[in-house]
Length: 314
Image (cartoon, rainbow, N blue to C red):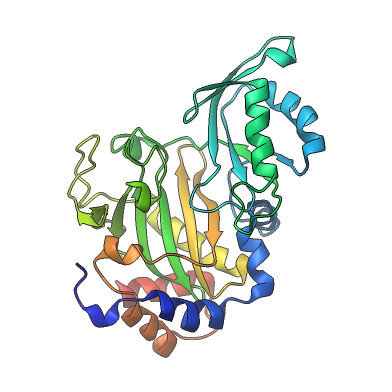
């Protein structure tokens, strides 16, 4: 249980006093659509995983699949408007020869898929199977992130990501989500991933949970989590603060990954961030939110917003 119940951010408060008040409906597409997020980020010089190609219609599938079959590196398939990891598929390798129709896509979640099976999966995404709004969707294909040694020591089930809650450009709370065997390699806490609360000042994990219960180590590797230092922590916070400027969303969840070769990268953004980050941090968000609204100086640069958060919200 979280202490200080009066500070717990409830769903009703989150919707009425944060999302409806600070998140303009016309700005949602930049956040909800991963393709728009990637394009806008590149325009603003915000680092993101490399975009390999976009698939926008069923008519493009044959040509795009042929392009994908020629790739020698692993990649990730994402529904442009998917949520909570739904529809994301990692292709680790491809077995292919001159006969394109015999290509086999080796995936981490669904095993080896023949061309027609992989095409059927992509068709499902385009038809809106994983779309937030239930209508037809687009597909974003990006490079697969190369995990860093510090995180490989914790889990080999998937790539951890760091969720930072940003209010009016100020990072206010953060956690890291470690995939597990139970979560199927995904970082979703409701599937069984581990969430670690991160101290804004130090960048260290100080508390961690799985399935709403406190844990002290990763369930698969038994690696101790408390005290684990986040690499590039200042870079992560600055990237989160910069991302909010792209989105123009006042209350925002920013998901960041750390690539072995490229450093901190913006993975995606969420205009309706969930509440489980409070469990990982064993602290409610209401008091922090009120402090920002009442005391945070206006018109600060991105760097100074991060500095204020670290000095006043840790």
